[in-house]
Length: 302
View 1 (cartoon, rainbow, N blue to C red):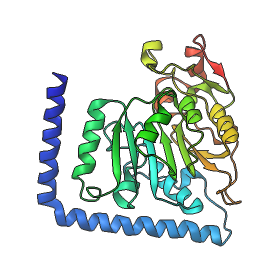
View 2 (tube, rainbow, N blue to C red; view 1 turned 90 degrees about the vertical axis):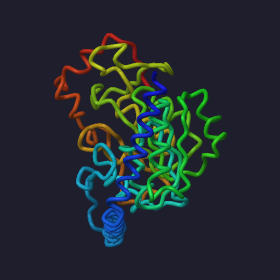
View 3 (tube, rainbow, N blue to C red; view 1 turned 180 degrees about the horizontal axis):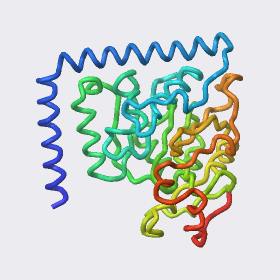
View 4 (tube, rainbow, N blue to C red; view 1 turned 90 degrees about the horizontal axis):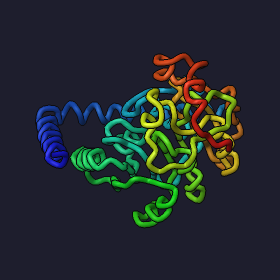
């Protein structure tokens, strides 16, 4: 039944994509070209500001959304403008159906290639179809890998698919994020985006214990028992040669830049100052009560 449902969804999306292209080909092409020009102009504006030694903005001041969930598109454009790139390649782990993720804008508007990884078969299938049907990416060097990533299999998985020398790494898997970044220590991207759990607060250096099949709601009905604290990720980044440069305003993702490519003006931001409350979680439970709700569960100090 699940396979039949997925096939229906794939057929429906394919039909809608063809209809959209037939009806909106000219409009979409002009809109895409306009957006591409605007994105490239913004990259040059950020670089000019750096060259003139002007004060750099906070990450939340450069946020905007094209395909990302929480303004990551604007932040990534800004950071890439400052640190540059070599191969225009990314690795994004955890994309759901690929329509709303951190690297979609780079793939669809800035001619980046790379690897999308998704463990849910339905999500991976929808993402594969989406990028195969999009006019901007149909001939791009993009691959959607259906795989459930663990620290035991991630190195072999990347080797199997030829993943190497990426400029950007994004990890959003709602659980083992700290452990997977640690397992990818040899990859060395210029920029790393990784989800943190604001429920742990700005000071604790904690991650949940390693458990590949972790399910946050199965452990606690709040769904707050997942991932790692911002300070835990900051310390891991420092060990791997990365500086924390800030978080998005909704308190979901932390952004790291490799020390050897970061310009002097792009200083490290301490976790205590970079920390933002997760707005979605705070609507459900006040920040001060979030860790209390899960404090009885096991954690590891890192």
